[in-house]
Length: 212
Image (cartoon, rainbow, N blue to C red; front, side, top):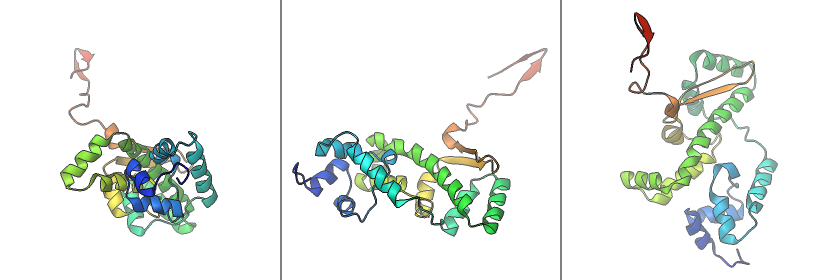
């Protein structure tokens, strides 16, 4: 930034984040967000005139060096996440967690969260819905955008109930996992047909036909 030269305030304006966010990144008080879960690096790269993947590569290395967050989620978040799981599977996960160290459940919840974050990430590509949300709620656009950025960088241990209510619950209809193979199935609400769009059942009137 000194070579360009640019100030933290100018960079914050380009990134559409509060200046304290930029200062925390520069000082190392805030970990670098995952490249796949943010639009910040593309903006930074253009503004600071860096090579296309310099920042993303550095961030990926930094995150890899820090390792995976192994902290368990709060009891409330675990309850909420398991509340969206198939009942039988949720019960099995609870029993297995009590017998073990909870790492299996933590890994599965992280994968579910990752699916939701992948969906929410798309909101950063279009300002209009975020600005409409800000207008509807009377909030500043930067604050609404920051909530999305914070959620995209969350792990099960840092996920808050407010994050869950705003981002996870509205997105996930249900989820399930095969505990033998590890195959995860997350059904998003956008993929669940409404009653209006569901096909009507086959009605036999001499010859089988599909109505609707």
